[in-house]
Amino acid sequence: MRRPLLLATLVVAAGLAAIALARQLTVPDIESAQKRLASGFDELERLGAYVVASDGEFLGRISRGFGSDSLGNRFGKGSRFASKGLFNPYSPYGSRFSPKSAFSSTASEPPEILVRQGGTTYSVGLLTTNPVASTRGQRINPRYLRAWLGLDQD
Image 1 (cartoon, rainbow, N blue to C red):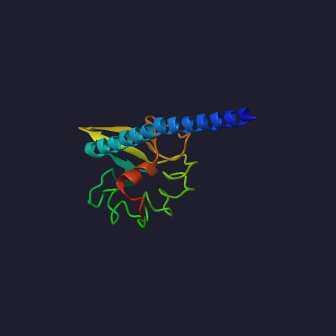
Image 2: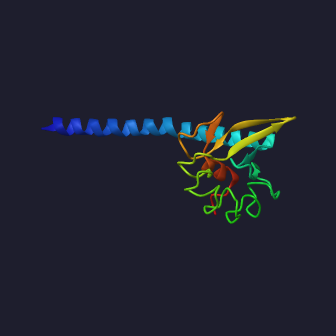
Image 3: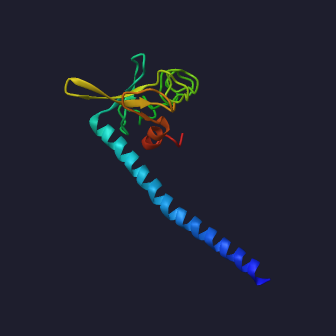
């Protein structure tokens, strides 16, 4: 009669070991991914990257600074109350439903991240939550940008 109890104990112990191993494997991976993402935004800030809507509207610079054109400025381009703001959930660029919004999972014309080097403008990718948006570069989730800017507390 001890065998089923012993077997159950071994199964539980193996399960706990698997959970502990999974935690050891995933936590560092998540942390390193977060560090890589933050260093990517740091590099975009250093390069002077900015966000432009598909209709040409300048939405702001990727910067944690306090300049009026900085997306990190809660009272400038980073304001959630700006009528044409990227982080205003009622603006065409911050709404969950607008085809031009970074936060619409079905956006067909999301904003683009650009970097100007010398006389040439380069596309870094699209700022979008749309998982199937076509792009010349990459898709960057605006929620990660907002978190990097420190605006998630709003």
